[in-house]
Amino acid sequence: MDTNADSSGSKKPWAVWAAVAMLALGTVAVLYVLFAASSKPDQSQGLTRFARGEMSTLAVLAEPPAMPARMMRDAAGAETSLEAFRGEVLVVNLWATWCPPCIEEMPTLAALQNRLEGRVRVIAVSVDSEGKRAEAQAMLAQLSGGVLPFYIDITRGMMFDAQAAGMPTTIIYDREGNEVARLAGGADWASDDAVALLESVIAGDGA
Image (cartoon, rainbow, N blue to C red; front, side):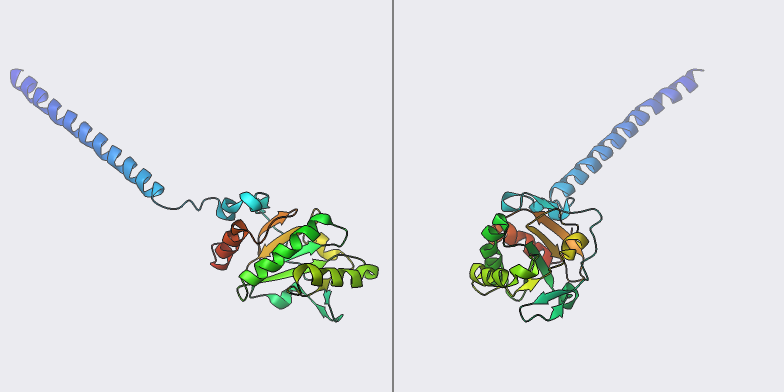
């Protein structure tokens, strides 16, 4: 009886030490995970991390609509579509002559095009009526300093295809033609906030 008691008693310290060791290892593992997570940039929110400053109303849709495939016309009246620019990062701006925020932000879109020339293509699409075509073309040339080419969709079908709630609406597409983000309302597209967003899309970070 005494031997058994001594044997049982001798095992208890080992059990305690084993438990302490397991607890220590668990603590180290937790600390390692926390340290590793804190040492990496937070990408969990995708492009929504750029929703600040001038891009504060930026939205990333869970199920964005497909890039509109319907025809629009250029300054010469020739038909084309956004599909013609697949392979490029696109900043598609839907605007109209009777939309004050559209007019206010247009020079900044031209500035963005100048700043990211060759890396981003800004496409401003007027949704004015046929009777406003000449006015819209002249206005775009003046507001953009001739930087942005003229496109028009007199049917306004692109607005419905893109599910744009109003104007201006600016939609960003990656090189595969996928919508990665959009912004409803006016913004300063020449701002560092906008450029940081586009640089991320150019780099292929995605949403």
